[in-house]
Image (cartoon, rainbow, N blue to C red):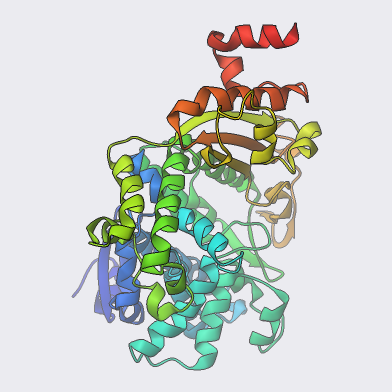
Length: 463
């Protein structure tokens, strides 16, 4: 096929397919990616909602891990190909391009049903051993072996290490030691958290949720280059980088950690726990051969099972279907100077402050310890991002926040403690107990600050 656009003409003659993606437009999928995509292990991602339980709150968030993974693969290919064309001295090979493209494609293979809700449940079921990143690496190896794809052990290892990001053990995978270590930062950037995974999921989630953002990942790709074996950006893009992290924070604050979404997550986790002794879910998450068969359809598997032993799990799911959800009780945003009071906060502390034993039981209580940040714990991630100026594109430097804006925050993490109740009849009593716990540290939970309904309780306690 011919075209006035020479690049399109070349692409159309390559062995692969053109896909129309809602975020990236028409993108080319090379055959070596199609070999992975057209497998049971990858097609499973069609049955995993990207937003997990948040889909029950935000109906527009119906997109899946399938299209996100293809998007990350496309951006990984786009970024490294850009470096190859504009910086030939980097000696980027077709092999480098194919390996990082496959890493982007496979980086989320290890996610379980309802994504991060399952991650928490699986971690508890295995005493903290289970992580979706580790399962992604196992599934890459299993996918290749099960579908007889022609890859050597060193290829598999390199793909899985690209998925995990930079670490000291990666050095032995590169012949010239630290040469090309920047490739490890493309899919999962452990240096500063600016990577194509975030580029895609932030843009894709915002698009499907109808959230507007001024952040532009395409500019970051356009104005990027490798300096001293690190991906750097034009200095004029520094505010755009801040916008990326702010948009990510906003999504966590407003969507991923929405209190109704969390209530649904806890119901899903309880349903899994009640079904586990009979469906042996926890024993199916260890090996990739059984894990890849687990999808969001696990809820239907429970509902459709004839086993009477699953009636309790079915009851929880039925409540979810009828929107009879676990109830949000209260929350508090803990000031920095008082965080230490909440480090060991537990259900037993609330039991201590109940008025009578009939108020509520420990099994009624769910405590969510929510930590929101800019993707690097308590630190400003942009402090670790390097930039270049158009006057000297071969030297990189950092830019302090006070050189960008005086409105950039000084704190880059916040701790929120939320309380939920499995029993709707006990919400008021649990709320009072939580108020009394917070009051001893001169803190007032949100519901008391926002509503006049409970003002008399504050006054009575002060008296």
